[in-house]
Length: 50
Ligand SMILES: [Zn+2]
Ligand SMILES: [Zn+2]
Image 1 (cartoon, rainbow, N blue to C red):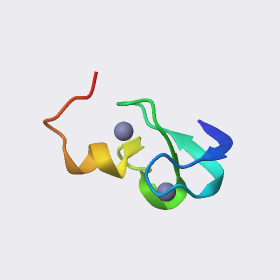
Image 2: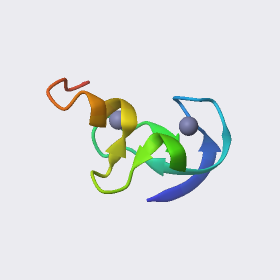
Image 3: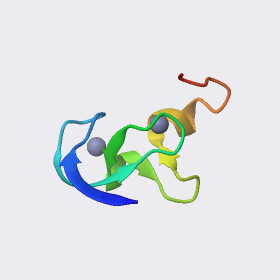
């Protein structure tokens, strides 16, 4: 999933990825491609945000 927007982690504008866990739109540098989720979620695998 790729779209244009503003990163919800660092606030940078550009091409965004959608986190499959929390639904946030984050930039490439704030996104973990191998896990398919943002780095915020990737760092907290046990913590689910509803
Ligand atoms: Zn970012
Ligand atoms: Zn996330």
